[in-house]
Image (cartoon, rainbow, N blue to C red; front, side):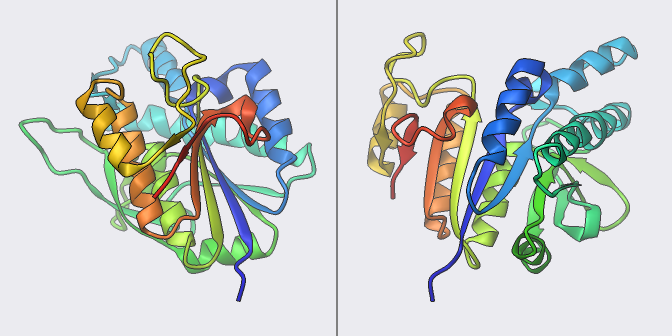
Length: 260
């Protein structure tokens, strides 16, 4: 039996926090055919609000240290301001969007990240499971989930959870039910051979090439875990993973395709 297609788009905070890029994203996302799901960030807005409230934002390896005060801020920003602006914008474009955190209907259950190498990330979650049945039923009813980067532990605690990870885990879980294309959108046109040359996009990357690019220093920093997530998703049954700009969602020749 042929599976129905599902497109999962993950967008970073910068895209959804600026009016011009937000409106372009909403138009492009609304125009995607068939089933779809959106995962979003919102870190810059969280950092700005924290600063206004006199709360220091601390990052380690690009990940936010989330103490109790910071958790309150990211919950307000991610689940509130950013998520509901996206939902309202999609409703205006006749997309029946439903904004969710992992805690809503127990969609994504996590555990608090253990202390590693002396680093306590605080209320940061590592995903344990995704409620495939419920998410799949929503999607089958032509509801479009819009997932904020928050999960829960089942014991009443919300957990700040990396949006790339959420997109990857949701894609892997739903691959049993749908033919999933996972698209990671960020500021660059794709994975670049030269960091400051936007025209040096690598069109396709296999796992062997990835290892060589890391060894040669071509792929580094935050792109390494992004690509690791992509290969894990493919291994778990996701049909296709693409890394591209949000403005290129409908340009199949753009971006970098990750291949098994």
